[in-house]
Length: 473
Ligand code: ADP
Image (cartoon, rainbow, N blue to C red; front, top):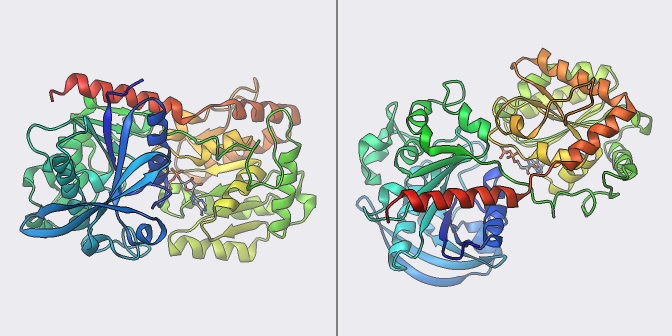
């Protein structure tokens, strides 16, 4: 147990209060898993309008918050996330708005000030509580300025990077309003929150061991790789986990028929039901069904997949994609679906349908150009849905390449970022699918993989302990 360990977990997203993807998911599960290990953890996030509207909160106190020359009206509200205390930072001028970051596809022009003010408020909160936390755990650029606002005698700060592609970079003219030292935040003529966090946190984690190595290279470092290399002795990767109480085909309430590794009949029923839902004939049952659930952004490798859709359709292979994202991708997918009847894109964010597609598909497509951790490939494994992934980041760490001769492995990986290599991996997948004995073996192996949050939380606990040992209080 780790009862002596009081941690403040600060994030812009924590499900079920607010979230847009992986960051919010981690905020939902990791603190719970840490609590089970005895960590005394509290959460902190901005009080967005949607949170105020949907949750009953209790007013806690007012906070004196200054940002540069501004005085920011700030109150703290208290909430609860399954037995964990949540501090909601109420700064109406910044967070009482319809969106978390801005309207779809764009950020609010004052996002730098919004999240700087949030960080300032967290320091003020610690101060008014007389510094009860032994560790401050920050996430992504939104909380990366926190260490810069702390006094000299301060608890150690852990920064977790969930996606280096989002750095919080802003025009230089905002600098004067942030009240931070120029040399720490300045990067390529802009203010860069994440760079500041990388240089001023005591330890840095990211969400898979391979991604931790990749982001130190120019190919994956998005310009920040020199700073990450500089701090490589303080950087490590810990895989995210899966909440198997939500993602388990044996008890999933969203799917029409439940199943497990010993009896996969229910999976066939899920496939039949989804084909019907998509308006596809049931004589496609013997063909492998390809599924994908994703934000429609370039990171997810949509460009590698687009040229293959005609080939797959003409080969008689149904493909379903559930996603929302960039207009251009939606248009391209829509156009393909008007030409190829076995291709079914669905433009929605739909949790229930995500479960049904995961259960119904035979092969899961995830050709990401980069992938810090990725969750859907882990979900797919548990559902006996064999992933086809690019060999990068968390996909490298969670999917084992299938050897068609020995039948070992859990998925099909390719490395080079070209459609022909994705196609080669897909073809290997189809070949394996056509050998029923081999396919069952792969499914059983996939379903036996275990990426529980408990395993991740134990590693975070190790990092917290290391921080306490190596950082003077
Ligand atoms: P990222 O955070 O880069 O979007 P992750 O794989 O880490 O990718 O997490 C994405 C999460 O969002 C997964 O739980 C996935 O199932 C979910 N998701 C993404 N798009 C949709 C959608 N259109 N409908 C339902 N769930 C979605």
